[in-house]
Picture (cartoon, rainbow, N blue to C red):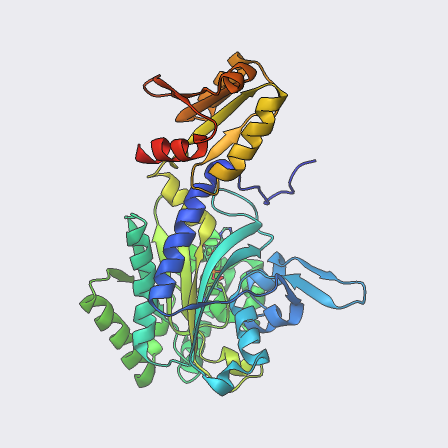
Length: 418
Ligand code: HAM
């Protein structure tokens, strides 16, 4: 049996980097007052269709959707924002305090064509903020991302930002975009032609090369921003500059989800081939209301955890964890004793392994080497009878003999002192 295409195991050999990122991210979120939220992996299909948008790639062709036994249409979450908005509304969080700051880490599911940096089950580190309209929060989230990457020792990433405007500026932009697209009709793919009526903004996100070439000179939302959106974007840019966060204004950045308004951004890398976006986010000021809540501004981002790990693997080899102590018991009485010792030593902070299989001394020493044990405790019937258990330092090859009565205390003292 094998994993299904696009799904993979993350094995213990590679988990150290994942844990390092999780630890740094949680520490940073904690410093800035974000609270962890855990949401289901399965939701009603309608939630994603209404929030991400019917005419997006995700909803049109990438969701894992099925009818459950009662005929309800359910979908494995392709992203976290919609679910967190649902949760915010369902639990009437806005009533007690509309300002909420969340983070979550977990798997998402999209049926894309698998390749390096792109999986069908992938992981996101997601952040969402509700109830803050101020542009300072936009800046703070971009700052948080760059700060996390800095703490992880990553360089060579660039922040691309754009403003997608609001319902006030959209109609004028949409009209100008449609006019432009009409003139390029013969160069657009079928998908784009179909989307022209439904959602022309999506054409700007088409991955087909011919379409990309046809729309290089497409009008930009930036030329159509209303005064309020212009002011908002100016504050974001000015504050980023003041904070020393480098950014590139990218008028072609439209993001692949429909709910965005105003500031949108991506953190991109040049080291992962086609999958250049390590994180993406933006404002979604209309989404809470759209899904049945009171008018509430929202903003957030998601880091592609798998991609972040792949970038980190290029600069860092995971540290191997060595064992403090390997106990080599020779004989049944020794095994019984060794078992008890290991149960006392591990909780005392001495990482101890013991061999249960009754192997020969030679085989046991080989395993101790393989596990990179710093010390080996040799306990055979002979050693037990003489009350002289042998502790060997595997680096210096020095040996000391220890008494059973004081064994645990002595082991802790010796191993912890080095
Ligand atoms: P997104 O751009 O669709 O945004 O995904 C965010 C990140 O997830 C991407 O930049 C990428 O690193 C990673 N990602 C996406 N698809 C895959 C895949 N198939 N394999 C590996 N990594 C992938 C969102 O999901 C929004 N919900 C972000 C957001 C939060 N906006 C506001 N709040």
